[in-house]
Image (cartoon, rainbow, N blue to C red; front, side):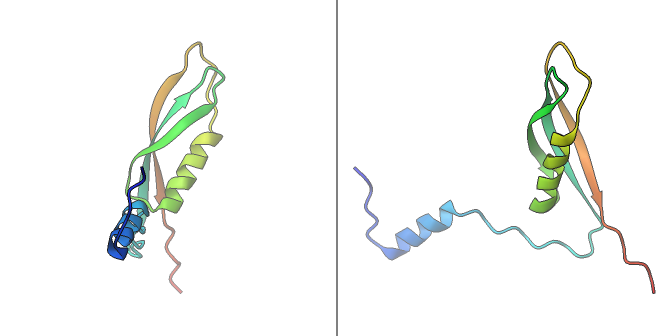
Length: 97
């Protein structure tokens, strides 16, 4: 039996709870961000199962960090292994005119 939502307020609360929170605005004064990533290195040297474990970066940079990890290749090995790495992003300042 499905629950019945009898009030519009209850429905609004349910919808709000199921939606992702909006990302906070990027600080224009911040000059660098980091993304700590954990990933698996397979026996073929390819990376997989990458995930962000700690960050102060906006979502766009987190996605870029994960994409970068998937482009990496290590030497082949007999056993798969887990690894962690911090990826840092630095903003370039506009040259003084």
